[in-house]
Image (cartoon, rainbow, N blue to C red; front, side, top):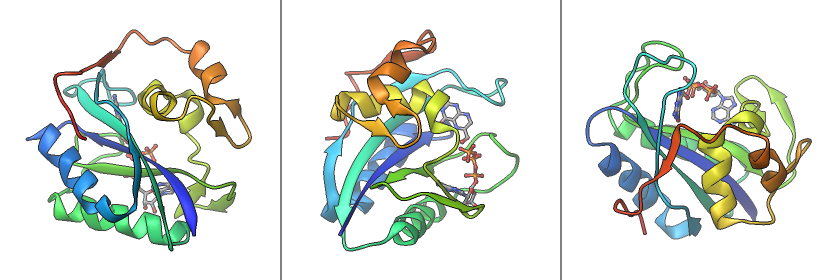
Length: 160
Ligand SMILES: Nc1ncnc2c1ncn2[C@@H]1O[C@H](COP(=O)(O)OP(=O)(O)OP(=O)(O)O)[C@@H](O)[C@H]1O
Ligand SMILES: Nc1nc2c(c(=O)[nH]1)N=C(CO)CN2
C-alpha cells in the first residue's frame, strides 16, 4: 500500500473536464482532492493559463503503478506531446510516493520541479497543511518563500 501526491494540470480545451477525468480515473484510490487554481504558465509563458489541482491517492500500487495510471489518463485525454512545457489537455505528475527517492529519468522522485512550483505546492498545502516534501522540508515553508502572484483559487470550479 502506498500513498502518492499527484499534480494535475490542463491548459487546452475543456480544462475542467480534463481535470475531472483525472479525478474519475483515480476514484477508487482518492484520499483528498484540492481546490482548483487558475495559474499563469511557467516555463513556456506564451500559452494559455492552466487549471491546476493536487490529488492525494492511496492504493496497492508502487510508484511505477501511479506513473502508468497517470500516463494512461494523459493518453485518454488525447494528449499529444509537442514541446516541453507546452500546452496540454492533461498532465499528471507524480510529486511524491511516500518517502521514495528515484533518480531514474523515467520517474524522478520526489518530482524535481515540485519544490519551486506554486502550482503544485499551493493546492497541496490546502489538502495537507503538515505536508513535507522529502529533501526540501515543510510545504508551508516552501510556499512562504514563493511569489504567488500568478496563482488564483477558483472556488467556482469544483472537482469534488
Ligand atoms: N515524477 C514524475 N512524474 C511524471 N513523469 C515523470 C516523473 N519523473 C520523470 N517523468 C517522466 O517525464 C516524462 C513526462 O514529461 P512531460 O512531457 O510530461 O514533462 P513536463 O510535464 O512537460 O515537464 P515537468 O516534468 O518539468 O513537469 C515522462 O517520460 C515520464 O516518464
Ligand atoms: N501554470 C502552469 N504552467 C505550466 C504547467 C502547469 O501545470 N501549470 N505545466 C507545464 C508542463 O508540465 C508547463 N507550465
